[in-house]
Length: 115
Image (tube, rainbow, N blue to C red; front, side):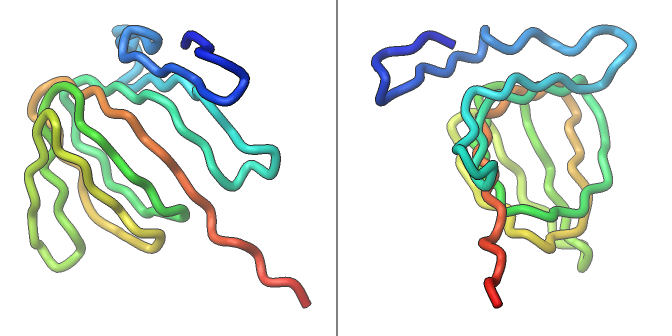
């Protein structure tokens, strides 16, 4: 990542190396707000199939590859380079990646209720 100014951060796919042969994924966090509620970065995966259970909201932008996202009811959406999408907290399903994938991500945790 290259800092543009104190107010912006450049995030590039090349800032996150591909996963090593012994691991299916790699991630490079580019930003986390002071509370930790908001984080962003780049994530890469080898061709893979992952069961997911989201605790946080996630915005994804596919840079390379293809994702078949299937929800618990069996509905599948396919995302390719240039596609952006949201996965809400509470989502359960399958991330199927028939080819290696690179994505930009932004994760957001829900605010905690104060008594």
